[in-house]
Length: 479
Image 1 (cartoon, one colour):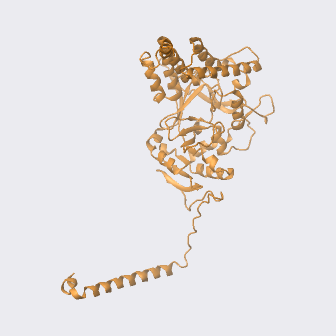
Image 2 (tube, rainbow, N blue to C red):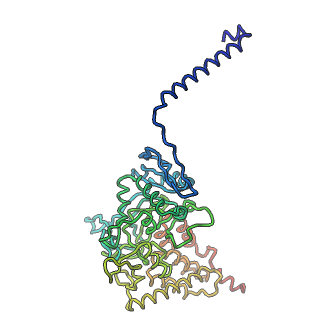
Image 3 (spheres, one colour):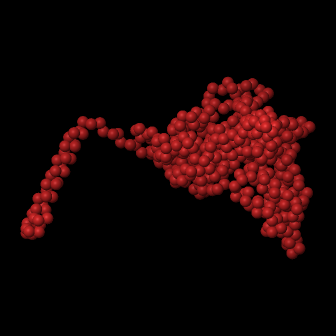
């Protein structure tokens, strides 16, 4: 500073000298660094996936090990779109792995607190007399004829009783299966994703590979087969979660969506039935909750519907044969048959709560006719301007559900009954079915679901509901 103030005329000379000295020092350091690293091994260039030719769809960095807590991006991607993300600390070390798009990962990333609340929990039942109560597990693992390992009730179960809760461990974007057209590349990505799960969680996941109706079968199921056989689905862009098997709807939508397959290893032992006795829903924590849908006797198989039970029998059989093949009880142990559940074989019996005296072939014909009639009436009840709806039609609609063993779909049935009775100005019957609709919605959608709230509004004031006397007023007006 003193040089600049007292010798103003030499300021530029001093600054130029200092600048030159700095540059020379920096050049010398760079030269030394270059010389010392000349013989050191150089890192191989990272190869970016090529989406055009479909080759090298997945790549992995050196030392690609996820941390034990917090979200982590693996940089292992397919077509630079579907990447693997993990959080091994979520759920107190249960962990979760995603195979999805970055935008959808960001949505899941914000659900940490909710995912921590999801847990694997069995609701034990209190049995015995006063003073001698015992907590008893409501089911046990057993072999189900034609279906393989499953669960059977150990005590009587009543409708509306919570059974168990299970947490998710793996999410895969639905478009992954359509966009990555090479099965070998899909398998490679899926296997890599699952390999990141914590040991205990991966062991539980891997058990799903060996669940087969044939105890002699040695070939394990692929992860893709596991996901499609238990096609639970969530939409990260919607508050409504359900299940839709691949092949039962268009794989590609006209707009970008956030639909994912979500896997629950603890639920794998629930066998499939088109007329199940267990209802389920996915809650706000992404946990899957199961609830008893009708009375279950000890020794009875516990089942859920992995496909829409209201679909025609031929479609249900086709789906089961493709994704959940079973053994034919009348053939050799290696023979695979279509859906073995009672509604597909006509072998309904008292343990399932729906006895009949006709032959299996006749019962199948009757069942098909009931389902077709049910769908026709359903269409009429959904049409608030239909002039054909009568109290007899409404009662027949409910009766058909009971005869078909569709207790897991009663929430909609009761709501339609309540609404149509209200259209006709019959508030007492509307109130009764509205109350039942609320109870059934709690079983099928969860106590805090929007569907429960909506049905509760009507049940609370049927006369004040917009639907009260709707058709009566239209008839009076000559419409």
